[in-house]
Image (cartoon, rainbow, N blue to C red; front, side):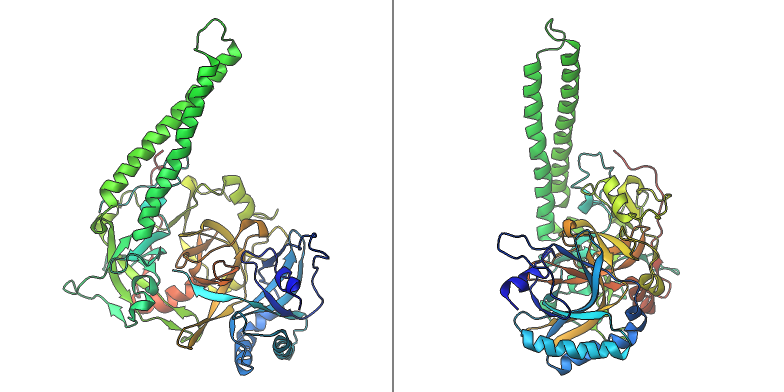
Length: 529
């Protein structure tokens, strides 16, 4: 395959991955250097014969690839489509380690994969190999929520209880992650936990992978911080970034007012008078925004600078990390952090809510999440931009979504708010993927995960390294899963992977905390402006 072909096959995907080989007809390619490559995007699959047999067929594919010495990293089932066009053929999409598979060996491996597909009477699925790397992404009370029109709306979210919480172990504050969802212990116990991944609080490089449970008050605490070292500095920087443009606007509005003259002067007509009033109002807004942001910056410095002020809670329970050990072969990588009750204003606390932020406008959010004409018209944008999480999707609903996208295809549109990429919308697939992570000592671990693709070619990646442990939900507030990692080139992600929440909660957490339940949504008075 020519170098141009290896680069153009997946042109349009976030990480611009390299194509090794694919069966079927050649894809459209530029006829000369001056001709632009054809933009493509990966699309999720929810309805197809392969979905019905994947529980039996799926595990055979990694076994076969291992038998022919293919160093695969991910196995997905997906469509590829030219942007804004109908989906093309379906592919068994196999990611391999960089430089590990030649085109000739890929051809041989593709034949074997096709034979396994044909054993299940599946003849319309092609096989493609691409280079990809799977990687895991890792004081006072918390502030109350604010409305979208508040001057601090873009910067205060990391200091509120809204998901996802930016956390780190106090022992390793430079290793940061996400607190994903609030869980009540239930029964006679009043404890409230935050769910996160174990590798956030016990980083892999510490060599600690033993069961952890704090059962008595006499045991030493393993404290967890709200905001690690970098996250705290990022909050301070974000405030200053918001102040600078407001300062520029203040100077601009003053110049405009000076040019318009003083109100009441004989030469000032009605039109000028209206312009003066408009600019005075804008000037007042910009000056007020600077004052509010400057005050907020001072409060953050005063109340949150010391690590002791940012202790959110401590680790209550965390089993060792295991991969592919359960019958479903999911990743068992979680920990529960017991909240220190004095850190939360429980009267104002709303429970599990995702702050949708201000980057995605209300109309854009609604058009993306409910894009098909048959979508329920009764759905409204969440009040105060806080998406309530009150339930989770079970296995059947995860594999058989009822929603349709703009192309009329069954899909599961999902959303998250995370460390690196903030609020993003993506498309989950109904067929579980296989992922394999390789380690420096030559060992590897294999698990099954739910794959999520970017919403569109124009929207960028759904996640990037650093977004791990984020909670992912659908537009109705049902939790889908816990983000575990992604695949693509080294510093970008084409496919995001998540551990299904129904399994994590029902089959893992409730084994240790049988009375546990999601913290219920609490309707409060309107959030302050």
